[in-house]
Length: 388
Image (cartoon, rainbow, N blue to C red; front, side, top):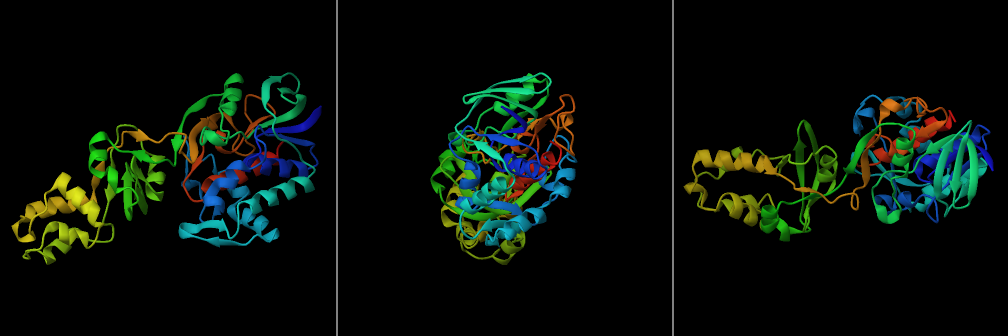
């Protein structure tokens, strides 16, 4: 059967592309491997879908080409998506740092997109896998539901994150088949793992959370950090994980709003133990472990000024060298992907292969935690939808 546009993947990017193409009078089919649309939307934001962020700019994205996302983000912004949400009467609220969530359930966003698809005349085929792709004058797709043909073929199949909900390497295989280069995919927004030594010290602090500033290279994030049995998680760690490379140390400011050296001066002559003084600012269990591993607690009046300066620096710049990440199983998104050099930033079309488009997570554009990846999906999907 012949269509103007076939889209592989019924996630955020694919559905947005289909809606826009359908509005322009194109005959559109979405093919989805899973049994229903929007599985990642459904589980996002703890089931409330952090659907965008009020503060989106191109600076909130990682890519080999830092300018690539600008065009799509400017042409379909967070305000445009918020207007769509409001048009459908979906109640939402703002959490920290501009993050927008549904008051109710993620299902409301999926229902909104399904209504928009129906209004635009989009067909959706679920439980259907694409087994072979050929390009002659048009694209020929061999699927588990028969053969389909289209002039524009859009890859919106996502990355490798969260395989339990159906993530595959389909998009990368198609890019490779047509000779497009790929920036090696890696897990992003993912918990980091302790070294054996650190796990033996801190491994049983699981569940403790504290506000920190985490730095890797020239990038820093100030949010909450969570101790786990395996390592470190929480928003600050997930954010920095996208920038971390194997073998690098991360630096954690455990007392970001306190000048520890100045505080120590206040207690310089007292007999109170270092651990007691630190426990007034940090969780007691952590202080005990940290002192045991770094500087045995003793009365403040027995610690030299030099050592107090050293302790202060060690707590403001706690160095941790992770041994790795929890991988694609626990990664919220996949960084890397189809090289942006291969695509038009305006249309998302492959410059070498007319009619072939890549949108969303499969492209080498990765957002911060907090609704930025959904906004890239909406924006890149919208941009392709104007061109297919």
